[in-house]
Length: 499
Image 1 (cartoon, helix red, strand yellow):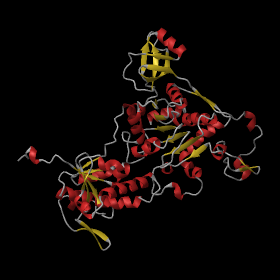
Image 2 (image 1 turned 180 degrees about the horizontal axis):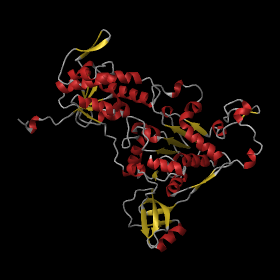
Image 3 (image 1 turned 90 degrees about the vertical axis):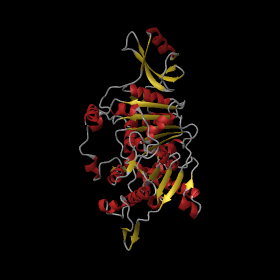
Image 4 (image 1 turned 90 degrees about the horizontal axis):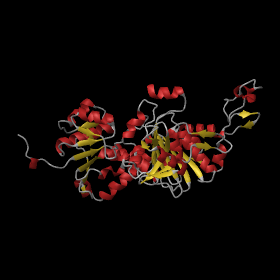
């Protein structure tokens, strides 16, 4: 007999896995007027993370604070508390398992909880005990309970038990550019607006124009204004808002005592314009390997620091947690971070190094490795002297800082240009932490390849890079650029498209 509509509870029960709380400490309050359950095993797992100096540790401490603010008495812990959004928050202690002697044992049964030791017998695993709690809760107190987890394998294990399991999708973003920048193609796909030839000529000479009939463009969107009579003729422009377009101002990087780089394609011209415009203080970039994201970011930042537009440049790269953060590694921050920010160091060496002339090799008889008995690297002794990397004077002068994301929290960074590489590995919460650190006169650049995500708890639609772009696009201080065409080498471009 089908249940009457009035007999069916309109509210749902959500059981949160630890990784959801680590991903977003605000997730406790994102389930509207429904009941949110936190298994006590989650508290145990959060306790293991709370002492870390990583973002994971900071988020675990934040969750503990939020729970402590709401569960102030034993009665509240037993009965749950009402949340500001109308929902309920409860902690679940599973009575079906006990730690007896030196092992966990099943001491009470329910239909689905009884399957846990059969399918997943290792109850020392916190994940398996969370599954057992979710199963027992669904069988006894919360019919239709849904396990919410960022762990795909945990979702599969839950479904094997007959439990409903979902990803945490509150911060999921639908962004058409994600698929466009991942296509196996070297063709650039930018918005083009066709205008009369005389209008285009006037724009080219006056460097700005107003086209009141243009619709659908957001502020600081880059477009190609094209001659409607000669479609092969066009002038790149930036829509600053309300139909007003400005001509691009920068198309090259000029490093003092170093090299000059010219934009190699239309996307790179867009990127350089945004990098050099002081009114744009937040830039997000999607681009596959070899499109010039790191090289152009580092080059433009270096030139502007040399010119005094910014007091220093900061570079960081997202490091995936592997159990210990970089604090245990010996040496200065730059030395600890070097393996991860090596692409930025490579870019600095390319920008600051001058091409060798053929005569430099005329009298070369032996390699540096054979002459010194060393490794042949630049820091090996050559004739008793140490050869410094070209970027080391920048570090010594305080013009270049290599920073770990875990150490950014709590800082205020004024008058600096900050490059965040591999930003597609960030969670939305981490991205917010970085962007909100920027002080007056600073610029932050988030660059990433959405096809290369190693963080198991984010994907192309839920990472901090796309979250930042979609939440802040349209603000007068923000611009977004897609880079489609690889310029590293012909082989690298073909490999990126075909492999």
